[in-house]
Amino acid sequence: MNIPQSSFPRVVIIGGGFAGLAAAKGLEKQELQVVLIDKHNYHTFQPLLYQVATGGLEPDSIAFPLRKRFKDVENFYFRLAEVHQINPEQNSVETSIGCLDYDELIIATGSTTNFFGNTNIQKNTMEMKSVPQSLNIRSLILENFEEALLTDNIDERNALMNFVIVGGGPTGVELAGALAEMKKGILPKDYPDLDIRQMQINLIQSAECLLKGMSAKASEKAEDFLISLGVNIWKNLRVLDYDGKIVKTNGEDNFRAETVIWAAGVKGENIQGLQASSIIPRAERYKVNEYNQIEKYTNIYAIGDVACMQSEKNPYGHPMMAQPAIQQGKLVAKNILAKRFNKKQNAFVYNDKGSMATIGRNKAVVDLPKWKFQGVFAWFVWMFVHLFSLIGFRNRAVVFLNWVYNYIRFDRETRLIIRPFKAKNQKINF
Figure 1: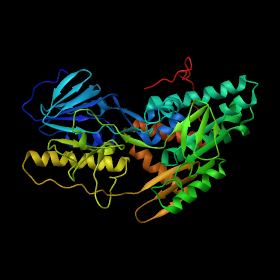
Figure 2: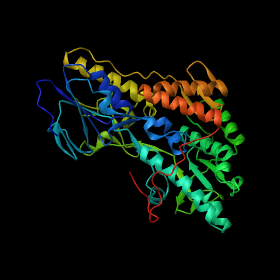
Figure 3: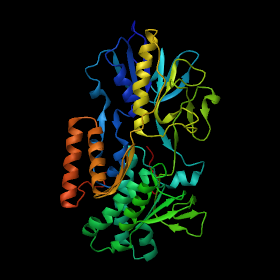
Figure 4: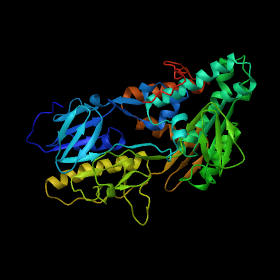
């Protein structure tokens, strides 16, 4: 890896997402050697991936180079690599570019899509956990409309214009709203020789309500907003299979669709090498104590989506969202410093700052600890929070200008097929 030897303890951080970035920030400018490893050379602002997928933003406006963030930090090293194995007995990690020893290890690998063991669904549906995957969705959406122009078969055309989103959480709700706005104001201009009214957007939720983790009022209002935009909502319905053409469910309703986007669940992205008893089955998250130390290991930490800190109040761990990840990253950094100087470490206490989701133009729901509101004001709050959570002045400026332009012109200029997704009828994976 070409990491120089140092008299300072080495802290290795795996993952440059919200959690890993927060930990790296907390350890910078300390008497430590910090090595950050990620398979991408950028941090992704995942809450806005759906806007990349629907042509609202270009990917470079929600991504920030990791090297740039730490360019002036001494004793900090970034390496572009994948970590394949952890060797806790030797205090080392095996990566695609070599092995590296550590004194303290922080695992912040985040989450990946959970298909619950269904290989057909995994093979044939689209997922949206990364920038490349969002670009794949954008290309597929536009390519389907191009194909719909060329076919005389009504059933085939309707299937190409039928979109099924599985999962009624924030990702599914926001994506459904964005597609509905494309149908309303953008696609009729681009495809005047297609009857866009035949386009169907189906949101399937296995639970009895949308946005299950939010308040009943937010769930009810989000559903009203989506219905007003023309989205078909199917509750208490589970998707059992998808062969690339037909979506089979546990009810009487099946769907013929060329595009199915899976947003129905996530699981931790763990790494081989630690004891199986340290990992919670199905959720694939590491069991951690109140200091985010992985069970049975004192110098290995897990933070963010890949960590599960169980308690009576949170039997399934904290929500797999940005705020718990950021807070855990900050605290672990402080505790590593405290541990080095033999000071008392602090247990993690999650400060729930609330949750929010946008459903489209002038439509959002916000749940704060003391206030809950919906509509236009919630939409402005959502935009303000997300805008200032982005890293870098340029990204904030570009996103703001895009939003202003899109709002005034009711347009999305980035609906471009930069790289075709459909290649010899095979799915491209990243």
